[in-house]
Image (tube, rainbow over all chains, first blue to last red; front, side, top):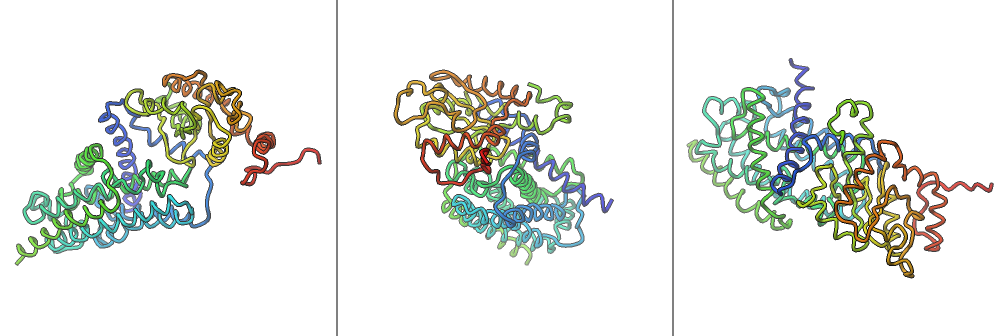
Length: 296
Length: 186
């Protein structure tokens, strides 16, 4: 089982991420009162993109996108999916926190070689947004780690299966809400869709990506969707004992996020940071203090 | 529509992918662009055929030129077309790109778009209705199926001809040739 998990876990994450991409397009279409594309449209797109010729801008342009994809795959290996977690004995939340930054960083490295002004604006927005949501995320993870007295995400899931979801327990309620508030920023959904913003900066860091590069970027996006939601499910919704329950929990969270995506317009970048550093940070900070008080 | 026939996907995945995932750059040259918003939004919903607008030519494989082409915008059209990854398809929308339309004697517009970039299909009319874009897309599917949507190949083979036409219009071009121009006289 051990070796199989290393292949099965990223594969499942990829399938779920691409399914979410297709589902998001379908659900957004239904909210617009359109019929919408078929669920398989992202797969069709990826097949087409891989069969296209694509121009490169240099070696770092190629390596950056691979770094980004590889970073996402490594995070998936640390993420419990049901009972499946290939690297359960090592790492934990701190490693996930560090490795989650490799995705944006790889895109930034790759885009820097592209030398398009839209890329520079997109990357600066992406890193500023990452700075915006990393502060509340750190506080949230600190609260979770303090409450369960462990840095292992597998332990967090195990303790929740005995004591119930941490989202509905008193000390971790506020960090849970804070994580849900920053979830659109982590996933790049609409109120925080400042990075791509096709109408403003012509899809930002993706401007010079065509063909295979765009295919890899889409796959990386699918992985990052999986990671953002799976982290929420693992930390606050009690993980799951089998993959099916885990998938259903992820689906519910993602569809809620999509409704937010459909209802809100886009923040400007300074509005986004102002929001992220005010309400989610405040909630996470109060939650951390509550956790500390209850432990005494 | 044979989008759901698995056998065809296994036989020629690339061709089916190009058919059912058309990412479009709508080049807003003239009045024709007003027909595009109803096409991509809730009224006619082009996304159910996999046709979606993208923001940059690098991500696109269908180039829709809507309306008259002035001499100045032609330069941008050529550069946009050359940036798109192959295989790429071009469709001229409205009668102006076909033969000049109502601008046939204007000093500032070009008459025949296909002298400057290869065009795979035309939508005639002034203005065509938004449904005409869907007719064009289904025709383009047929052309891709038969391998007749080969504008990008024609551009490579006859690059000397296209480049000469472009240079005739502008004198000198600010960008180097996309493909090497071999001299047939030597």
